[in-house]
Length: 90
Image (tube, rainbow, N blue to C red):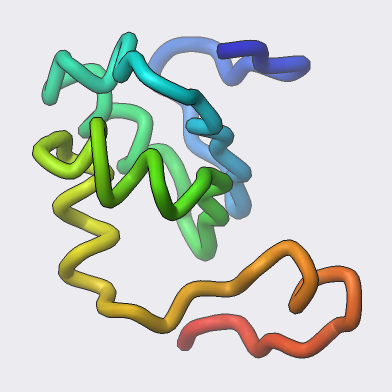
């Protein structure tokens, strides 16, 4: 996973974008504690970027996979973003 900007350990931010775009390995997502820390660093909103096939497949039993399942099938696609056809979740 490549992160151009990293928050110092323990800090929070208002908005966070997380990329978990992988193909066949879950990497750090094996560790629920590390994933939990990552998911609890935003104060207002978070965007998680991934592929549906990865989240519903290899990563389905990870914390992020379970979060995606709990959120339901209302996914925003890359094309939705390009065409500005989405609304943030409230």
